[in-house]
Amino acid sequence: MDYKNAGVDIEAGYKSVELMKEHIKKTMRPEVLTNIGGFSGAFSMEAFKNMEKPTLVSGTDGVGTKLKLAFIMDKHDTVGIDCVAMCVNDIACAGGEPLFFLDYIACGKNYPEKIAEIVKGVATGCEMSNAALIGGETAEMPGFYPEDEYDLAGFAVGIVDEKDLITGKELKAGDVLVGMASSGVHSNGFSLVRKVFEMTKESLDTYYEELGKTLGEALIAPTKIYVKALRSVKEAGVRVKACSHITGGGFYENVPRMLKDGVCAVIEKDSYPIPPIFTLMAKTGNIDEKMMYNTYNMGIGMIMAVDAADVEKTMEAVKAAGETPYIIGRIEDGEKGVKLV
Image 1 (cartoon, rainbow, N blue to C red):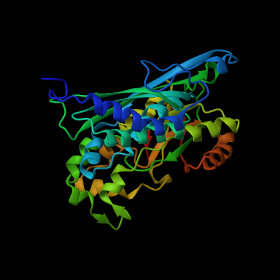
Image 2: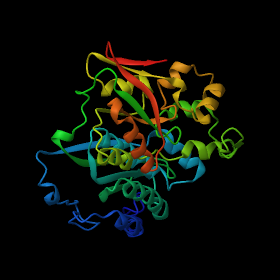
Image 3: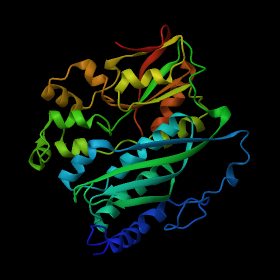
């Protein structure tokens, strides 16, 4: 008896690392001090010593049951983008600049080519957010996961000068809410998605006229990464007063998280186009409107609150970064919470 007969192929692990390296090296930043394959990743903070009060911000998350679609579609090169996005968007919400990322893949059987495809997506997400992929772990766990399944999670660290932290403390009535378009469902609510639609290859390969693509293509579209857009807004000289990443819990859970006591966010539902995947889902699953807004991003992946005088500059900066902005509401005095009108 040996480890391979027990279900863990060490040689496959070595091959996975070799296949990953070509993708990982594209994410390197000058601050990275270690090579892939070591026991840890080292990142120099020398470049940030001129900040008044350098402050680390961090985020961790996974892809969730969206991975079930990747298994059925046998498409593994985009879920890594989702994993990175869920972490770095949270960092950007605080005003932080992502520095580095680590991933964790647990699988029933290590298929090196598949693992490399997953990491390729992670590396793409890191490139999009200018984060270095400085380490990770691939755990082969026979008997714990089915052979053709895996889980994917990640962890990111960023930096911000304390004075530039986005806290919501400066919010006031009259501030304007600017939302950035999502790419679709992103990486939340897939347990409900999988109840609404039949999760078979035939179902996911079905073309829908209203979607302009197959159901699978619409659902697996990777989560938008808003790091560059938020950086562009900052570089335009705009002070973002509050920011909310619309993830699990939709508008009703996430928008209040960016508010201080005594102010309310008012969002106009008809201020932007709702992507057809949400309309199709609500109709097919007979899901009421409030539940949709309480579960999904409904087409807005990130919301910023800015001074009314800065709206035009904000819109232009977001467009310059390649994202689509909408003026979706305002801040009013009142009980802390969100109103959809």
